[in-house]
Amino acid sequence: MRKQKCSLDLYSDFLVASQTRYTGTELAQTEPNGDIAHDAVSRWLVSSRFQPTELLNQVRRLVTLSKGYLLLDDSALDKRYSRANELARLQYSGDEHGLVNGINLVNLLWTDGDKFVPIDYRIYRKGTINHQNKTKHDHFRDMLKRAVNKGFSQQLPVLFDTWYASIENLKFIRSLHMHFICNIACNRQVSVTKGAYVPVQDLDFTQEQVHKVWLKEFGFVLVCKIVAADGSETHLVTNDLALTNHHDFTGHFDQRWDIEEFHRGIKQTTGIEKCYSTKAQSQKTHIFAAFRAFVKLETRRVEEGISWYEQKAEVTRISTANYMNYLANA
Image 1 (cartoon, rainbow, N blue to C red):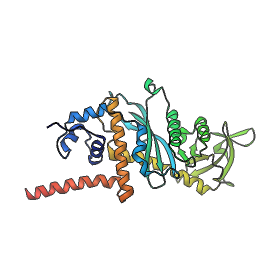
Image 2 (image 1 turned 60 degrees about the horizontal axis):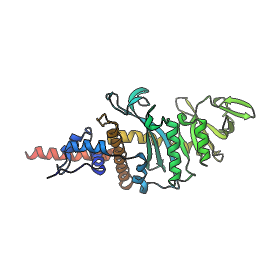
Image 3 (image 1 turned 135 degrees about the vertical axis):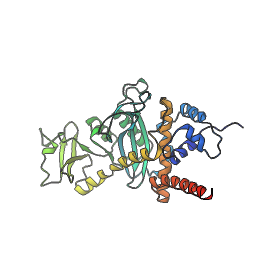
Image 4 (image 1 turned 45 degrees about the horizontal axis):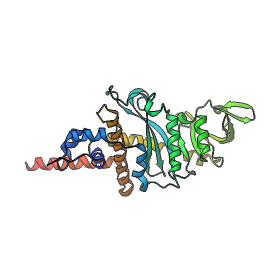
């Protein structure tokens, strides 16, 4: 009998179910019918041609185009032990607070404060011809423009961190008739009095919590300050001039943390970093399948109220119970 071929559903289900081993050999050994060969998995990984832009089709029923937030940020997939990996480059890792060999993803997430839905992503590869030498900022703008073209409301606030708060990006978001809320470096130049610029950190927030200022090279914005428990300060900026209430201003920006939760969740539950092939196309297919696996986890979390981590634990719990039952009856 001819063995079956691998598929996106089969592979993504395997990523959800597996705990530590994400190899084609492990899939072949655990596939319920036992009729798939490990080399069929390898062939599927290298021959598939899924595009990040297809991800939106996978999540249509989870998103509401007219409300919520669009969050953008990047994350490094740790490949420190895979020096021959065709996609890996030295990347800054927030988890490691330094450089690691890895694959950099620029991600676009939609959230309404409850759902965590990835709708697009890009693999950033510095200096590669087939990516037209696009920067992270280019990917940032490409994904945002595509989201608007696909029907996401221009009323959705766009949230991101300091790295993407360049004047070019801010002007691009304004050209889409959208509002941004982001943190900015403490030395960004703003003006209260025409022609007299000062670092945003020098503004007096004791009398006014939110200031309307002229951001150099951009135009009028609102800025506010957040002081953390350890005394560190964060300065926020928005082009939504109606956000004069400090609580509302900072409350909207708090939603940006959702993309950090997403990054942690997809790494811990889908094995997105655990593809052992060195081939670029195999890595791309694995990454797309990991996003698909996360969407399956998120769909069940939304519909049944079971967390991503509890869903993973269920698999181990069933396996442990079956094995203990086997031992008891041996």
